[in-house]
Amino acid sequence: MQQSGKTEAPKNLLWNLVTRKERWGLSLRGWLFVLVCAICTGGLLGLGLQPFLAVSHRVDTKILVVEGWVSDYTMAAAVKLCEVFFYPSQSEKFVN
Image (cartoon, rainbow, N blue to C red; front, top):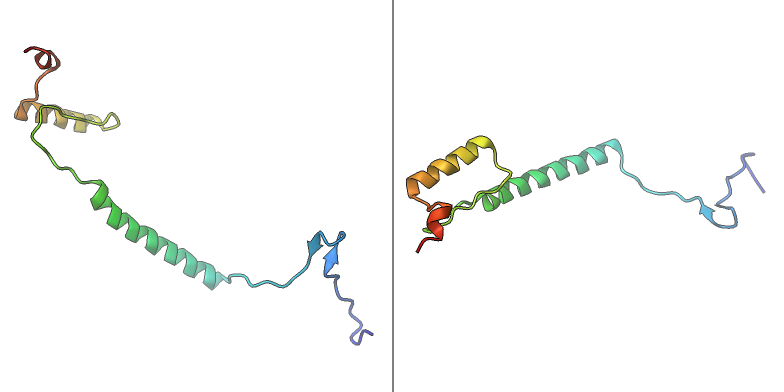
């Protein structure tokens, strides 16, 4: 028997393919907390990874490797580095 006169929505529809149930979800404050945590985590990872990935140690060798995606001014600096530290040119490499 129903006491309040309201009809309750069915819990299962379409031969139990769709069910209705109560769930917990994040509020606006909860989403803001998750966003702040994600930003802080990303910032800390970025600050920690940048020094590791940006290490540049020069070694005594006759080969200079420059990546192809660098800008024009970086390529000019690499050319000056070749001139200062005397890296052999292509023709000098194969002459014995």
